[in-house]
Amino acid sequence: MKRSSLLTHLRRNGCYLKREGRAHSLWTNPQTGQVQAVPRHIEISNNLARKICRGLSVPDPGSE
Image 1 (cartoon, helix red, strand yellow):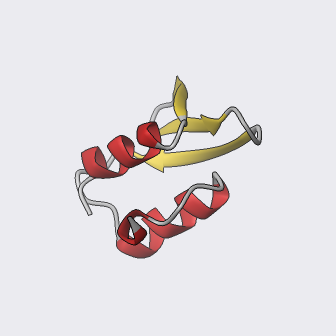
Image 2 (cartoon, rainbow, N blue to C red; image 1 turned 120 degrees about the vertical axis):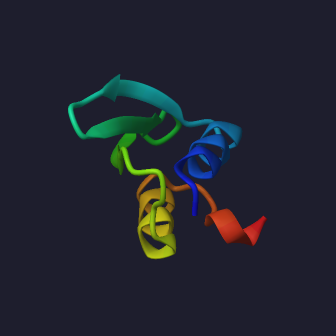
Image 3 (cartoon, rainbow, N blue to C red; image 1 turned 45 degrees about the horizontal axis):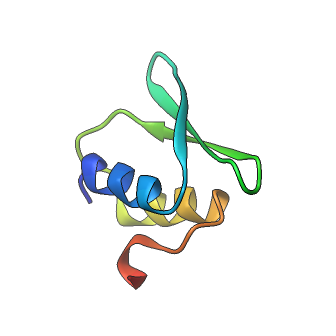
């Protein structure tokens, strides 16, 4: 999946960018306080995208 699609999905579900790291961006869910690192690759594997979404307590990208 494209990184931009994942970030759009996270924004739609209430998450926001907490800070930029060197190789990752840290995203947080304000409702739960959970933080997940999103790598700065153009393509992110579907399994990793699902793991990031589960870690932030948002629905999987393909379930909408």
